[in-house]
Length: 427
Ligand SMILES: *Cc1c(COP(=O)(O)O)cnc(C)c1O
View 1 (cartoon, rainbow, N blue to C red):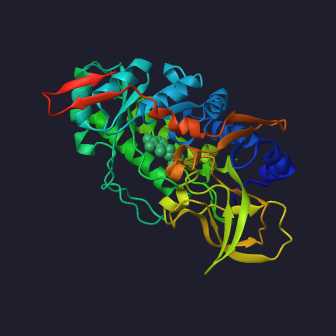
View 2: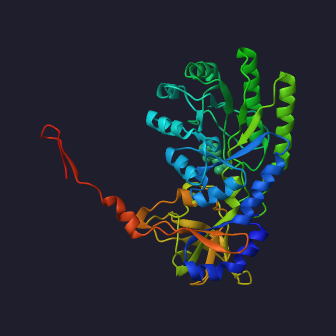
View 3: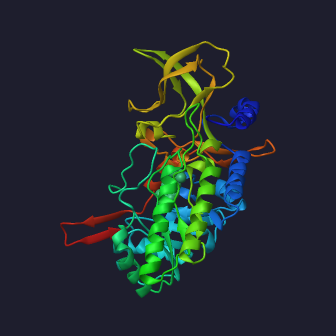
């Protein structure tokens, strides 16, 4: 089910006052829910040498990242600014993994300077890395995976990761640059509510690690199965079986280590959505009811603040109308104000009849929500609030203003006279 009953109760209790005080729209994150999920991860993987490296691209607010770190998380960063945000949240070298792709030499140099563990995604990376730290990760792409259950999943078309047959070449290149200790990484899909694919990913990595050990004697230090754990977006959808996966992982890693006669590797996970997704909502106010060819409920936010419904055909985000459960239902599109027809948070959705002035909230936007927002049509980004466990609500990012948006127009005057021998004028 979308947002937990507990979160719903906490939210319903304070929503009108929070909306009144801070104004709408806003993202609101539930501290208690995030802390509880971190505790569930810790408990589930307690028998293993385990760490969650939260995927920073899923939430970009350092206040939330700080909370995650207080509860044991490190950070998986896909870009140099991701590393900057994580460091702003207090992360130090040992907390950081840099899992980039299509990376430049300058980006590698900047990532190296933070002391982050580098996950190397392609042989071309070695041309951009003059030297390496002692320990690195190598990202593999299995091409296809044997697994049961879930719908089709094609990994060979993905741009991520080395082919398995490139592993030994990658090891040689890494050793030539100073690396001595290795981990293996693979992430093949996102939003998985069954455990099949992630378990198959772990089996694939262990098979590769076993072959590698026989071929060259290399003993992997860690296995990183990436993120991709799904959450139920629709009412009634099954939840990811975390305990089941953790038990499988324990069995697979322990059995493998016994068979190989080498120590059990550490296990890393880089979940984003699973950890914070269900613990964030986007709160908005109804500003119009419009009877056109369909019934439209117009709200004071839209897909510029939360793009997923416009980006992925299959993305569904549950919507609640605050304090309206007893009203008759109707089928409506929930729309923003952008001059794009796909500015719809919901299409043909059955909802209690919403009136102008009502508060609504969009569920499950605590990951890949604000961080994917964009200011097209000068629809500026909303504020972010944190609902603390004690009921206090704190502003953790103000709304973007027109001045913020116009700030990058303030720049030095630089003109290159291309027809005058390349003379450059700077004033
Ligand atoms: C996006 C990403 C993640 C997180 O994905 P979720 O589906 O949010 O768990 C983890 N690792 C890498 C390398 C990623 O690119």
